[in-house]
Image 1 (cartoon, rainbow, N blue to C red):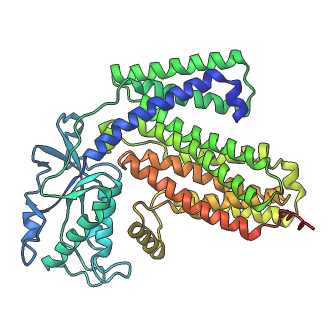
Image 2 (image 1 turned 180 degrees about the horizontal axis):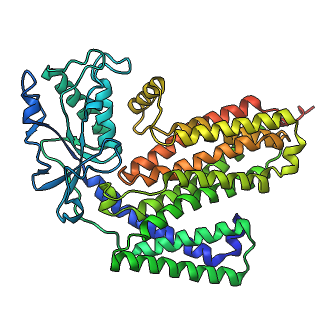
Image 3 (image 1 turned 90 degrees about the vertical axis):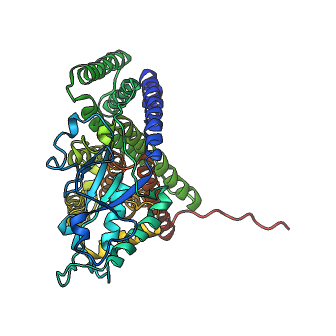
Length: 485
């Protein structure tokens, strides 16, 4: 990959220029997010009447989604966008808006759930809404005991939840208040088109993985890519055809994980048996640089989706499943080209080949099914909750428990001269790069939180990978100098 960049200087310049512009746009978005710090907990007059008294630190309101001159976008039940029935004129509203989490009956019924004695899981749900999804108005409803179905009428229970929530969100720089923050209408500056040029340049570089491009083709494709980006931007900004941001964000979410894999597999293929310290250093270097490429892609996505309509989830990233499947498909191609040619895989023992293929199919199938939060077991949800209490941002399980240890396993097998058996682990490692960029695709999550989540996942996964390499190491040791006589 380094050679491809050196040979295609025009693309390298476009990519660097695009990344600089993306960073500037991300900086503007980050400032907006850091200023959006006040959170309010509300409860309708009707619901308060069912309790023994009005809870402290809970604001009473009449259920109107126009509150303090701010339009509340009530989050839907799948926590994706907003409910049209509550705010039918959201797309035509030109005033400030704020995201609102409504404690729907299925969430309110989490009292005494997951083995917790009280409202701990409801508190966790509210915490995630505020910190992970930019919710600034928390609309609570009466809690229901998951075991008995009775309504919790003790106002002290609600006061404890609000007090605990206030303490937990403080480390995110958020303040529980009687008022709340809102986003005004904002569209990214025209610098966005230069960020798009960077995505186009990255896509042309990726083509070089499939075809060797001459200088002539490099120039032609660069001009065509810039022209296409300019046309899409004009169509969106002048005529209202919303194609520029969705297409470019999706392209970045696919291209940069693939570039990460290209770099990682090239480096893996060059590994040889060496001292333990150098092997550990090589693995760390591969992970850091390849993940850096993926994070750059995430920043491109974050810049493209920096408008207030994305921050408020009026508009959302499209193609989540496909953006995670395509890098896995590329990983199979890249493994066969750079790391394990088919003849080397087939030269291995057949039962190992079959076992590896079966494990890979199961792993990829599980990964596809588990994209999102569906199908989470009680034990895993408890583990996730523990991580949220322990860390400022919960890293993604598929990254620190699957992808980065699998990258280490592939490195171990390559250094031991058993690269024919490394391919299932190398392909499974691809899920980490796709997941890292996908973290930034959720525009309603603050940029700093997405970056922190990714880096924490890399740190934990790298630690597991380094331990795995150290335990299985059997390379040459450094010879000690003979004592002087």
